[in-house]
Image 1 (cartoon, rainbow, N blue to C red):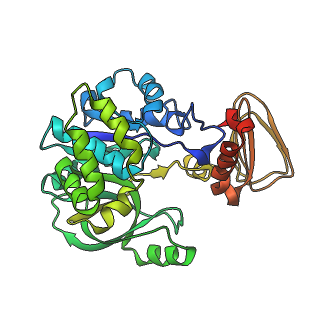
Image 2: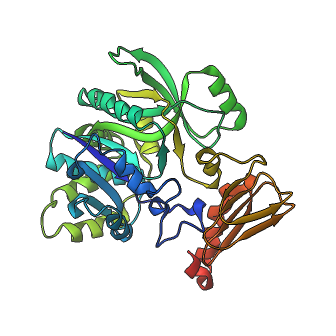
Length: 357
């Protein structure tokens, strides 16, 4: 069967101060009336029964996520004691799904993406699931809208025969986040996609690749798999997981995996990873401003203002991000918004500032 796995364990430090330990970014409502996590579940509803949607997250985040989707069974949450990166998280989910269904096909998705064209997204998953059944590791590549340096890229190789309007290509190589010149060259080339971090494969196939490329992780996963469904499961998981090495699925597995293909898609995808992503979610006004708060301004342009109840007044400012919450305010140059995570690191180092984490 086909199952969905939502990766929902991130902390979202670049969206501070709205995203906090007790209110991680995937639980925030930034577009429409649903949180990012609720939206991720909602767009899967036409393809998956609620019992076939699973979530991997940190144990300390599962309660708030569960409260947002009460119909999602508690057994469908795979809780990590601590975050160890996407490779271990996916491996943990894969052993559970393989135990449940030896022929399980899993779509690995994230809780912090915005997707405009839901129907095309669903068609892409259907096509990818067919390829996954044949043993391919499938990734969805995003058609670039510009030479972004914030994403990794996928270089398309030769085309595979396809009986649908969606093309399929072998992957020639994965490219790490490039510099500006390299990004311009790749976009101009026309044979590159952004790496979306969305994957579709059989559970047994990804575990085979983990065994071949990350043997230590595989051994740890097998020890955990042996006790799934047994009273000692939590004890074994809590003992093993802190010693698991941190690694992403891209670096740990995908760059050297066999039978990897990409389906390039253009379904209006936005990675909501930082305040810069607001530019893609909202239409700016005539001054280039994105205003999502009570606001009064004079001679201010190209500013992003996010807030709740308090009025934000601006005079003669340009190219800033201003985020107001009940207990903290961020003021940041737009070209330095990637450094917001460094503010979070400062808060971590000073115990007097921990309450703002």
